[in-house]
Image (spheres, rainbow, N blue to C red):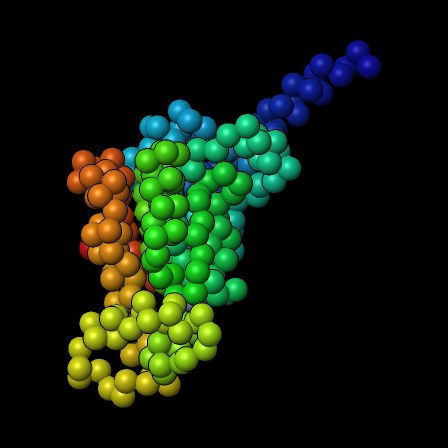
Length: 250
Ligand SMILES: [Zn+2]
């Protein structure tokens, strides 16, 4: 027992070394996120101070690096019960992400984010309506998120439904929101059917860009925050075959 303190000392040295090594090799981006705890199991969460210090550009960078970890098969190891406890009293997410209902695009997983990191709104075809817009206003104006990301995906069933003019209950009205995106794809892209994956994916991209425009046009609150540089707005496309999110430069 009298040697215990010495063992503890060397254990601490070893643990610190492992933490540093892990941070630099398998989790290269964890160090770039303010307030993130480096190491094999992340127990820390977004705090008010961390959220306040983040810029829209940094927020996008965190999403990019998270997706890179997902694609590489090296997601951060998280202590979810610890994160649940740490977020119980409040939440300070750095981004709000609108993405599709599709089960193959579980957004927190593909962006490698933990409990309390991002707001997530999911609906078929990642379309916008007043409730989603109100949720974005809550996320940014009330809760302090710094980035709005709209992420569509390849081979999207909702986009195919709009292309095929599917009529089915309440789905009909949802698909109607996507149809203006069909006209945004150049007429020389043929054939304009759901079997033409290139056409479908171009409609998906046009749909995301349409939603980005709608967010600015339909929310004076978000437009003011965007114009002031308080928040950012970015579109992107998730590739079902690779797991990669391609964020739009413009
Ligand atoms: Zn979809």
